[in-house]
Amino acid sequence: MDDSLFQAVYINDLDTVRKLLDDKDVDVNETDQLGRTLLQIACYFGFYEVCKKLLEKGAKIDEDCFRRAENGWDGFRHSEVIELLSERQKGNYPPYT
Image (cartoon, rainbow, N blue to C red):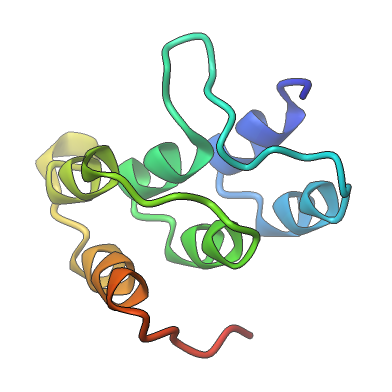
């Protein structure tokens, strides 16, 4: 995968994320040069809608996702993202729009 999807996630460009995820060859669990997944990056910044889209496309939730949402950008806790991850792990899938 080229870096364009990582860049779109990093800047919270939901439209571009949607377009790039439509490519059937995209591995949403691939890591960047620092070992972060797309979902981990979105969790850290609290990009709720991007998180939802990545989860819809099969992104795997790990402890790092929760840790990054708990201790997000500038020390901010992203409660809405944490709730989304928790519900998804329980098998309660929130409606996607």
